[in-house]
Length: 225
Length: 174
Image (cartoon, rainbow over all chains, first blue to last red; front, side):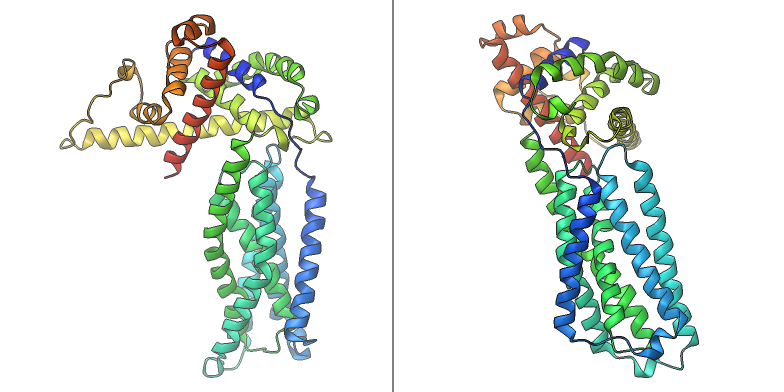
């Protein structure tokens, strides 16, 4: 294409210029997410009552390692998702991705260490409660994940699939953190599967429709620009 | 940039004119295929236009601008790699019959994806894109040939280029 073509295109851009509203700053997005998670925590409280993980679980280091791993994964993933959609914030996005991987490693380690230290647990593996915990984590994370995806579509997301994965993993693992602190079970296999691996799997599944959502909403907003 | 976000066309015109030589220089240092350089420059400006709402006044402008430009270069490098891969695999596959030659007179110079995308455009947009971007005619001559006003032709060319870009992007993702 010719240099004249570029100049004509620039004239076209100027003629088609419409006012746009700048995206909100990251600080206010994080504030909004904290509010949504606050509501989610309240819903969780109403859902399961005032139950808390048993004291013996809190005294067990792998329980803490899994909990911290979930929190770090959630924070890193959401940071990676949000900053990846804003040009010029690539360094923060890289940091977020690194943090998310470190958190995933911690959570896996917590689950595996818990399993290694436990009595033979497979015979007592409570399948029903594991499925329930995974679903609850997913349900708690779904609304914040949707809010994140709407923001991503409004920003300038170039890889909707990857962004949706980070957004959903971040939101669902944070939901799983809430579940982890309120689940009465202390079976190690349940903690590893129901609080970490199954919610992670559900988050990856949830990312599929959300990536389509980002693509669809993003295309709509681009058509308007 | 802030005035641009508010819809100030004069400020936008001035900004784009200031950025054009800077971005051309930036792209020429990174894209070595002379034929593709201007394409990438145009992609940078389209991305800049579409991403203008992501700039925030409290952040410095240059990192934002060059991140947009860098992403366009990365996209170009990736799509070039994929295209080369496809061409190599087609060459290796001796049994493949060539696709029927398109009716477009410029078809010999164009990539098959571009021809297909051009044919998917509405007639008036295809005509505008062909006259201005492919034949390199001035707007005055092109508008005379198309029988429409200059500004109508510019809008058609811009919309056509945007639609082409979106189509090619979608196909690349698929």
